[in-house]
Amino acid sequence: MATIKDVAERAGVAPSTVSYVLSGSRRISEDTARAVRAAIAELGYHPRASARTLRSARSEVLVLAVPRESGKYRAMDGRFAIEISDAARGHGYDLLMMTEPDGVDGLLRIARSGLADAAVLMAVAQADPRVAALRELGFPTALLGHGDGREESGVSWVDLDWAAAVALAVHETAAAGHRRMVFWASADHEIEARRGYALHGLAGARTAAAETGADVRVQPSAADPALLRGRLRAALTAAPAPTALIVQHLIPLPLLLAEVAALGLRVPQDLEIVLVGSLPDEPGGPALPRIDLPVGQMSAAVAGLAVEAIGGAAPRHELIAPRMAESQDVRPPGGPDDRPAPVPRMETQNRCD
Image 1: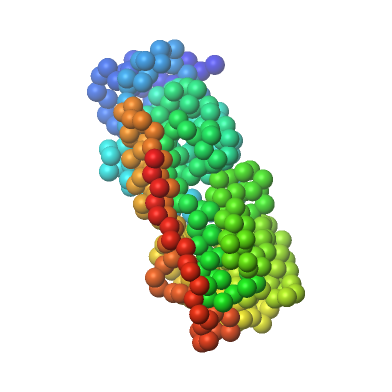
Image 2: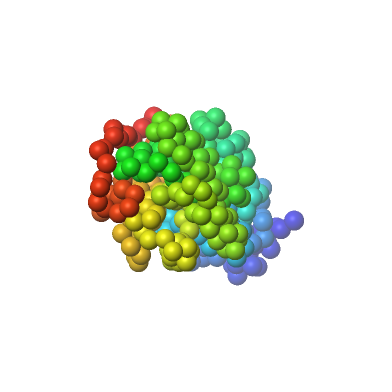
């Protein structure tokens, strides 16, 4: 088991300096404090001090927990990390990123060591074990996303209303005259992990299918590119052919358009594509109907909720209403002409409690 002397040697400081960083009893330069915290994290050191003492020593750091598998990159994760870092800095906090796939052990180690004052959790699952572990420890926590609400009643969270977003996309597509659609859902592993956004999106598709009477075929995406391509071809060539593809899982747009073109399909004459949860201001590609993920709004909100939790504020929940981007309407089957008479559309609004 690591000792305070081991930490001091790794950081290149005296043991007393490590103690000062942990207790906050003396002013230590930020460079030295960072070196000490890094050594604590590397060695897994757990100081023998009371929880009260550790809580009183503010690190002015938030830990962002982003579960990741080695070799797999999601542009969305990077965008959120940057935006949350900027928002945290506005509150006077730095950001420490933790990418352990399970997350529980790493978060507990960081919370107990005093490396961070609060945690921000991404990729939140239903009955997420990280939430239960941090709540039992009494560690301030805020969630970017939510599950079914039962495990998260005692912590703050902000999320896009994914069920409403997918439902809105289906309603808008049906209003444009499309009766046969494919809903390209989150990937298999995200659904199996019971990620909130994945399950909420599926629920929204099923609800809107019943409300509109449209034929909405649900197809989970895949992490493997070859499997993804195979599923995409099968979905788009099934009889009767769909006229619209609603995409929640963010397939790289060049790959998606290349596969559509390889099948001899024209956008939007043969296939309309509607994006749900796309990155705002993403460059390249044609103008497609879309519901952007409000990355900036969500990042600012979750950083603020984490800082509020540090101060002991009561938990707050914010569900952001989806909006269709104004740049492009859903086009009817066969192209922009012969638009059918519109049908009533959904109206959504933010919910806070």
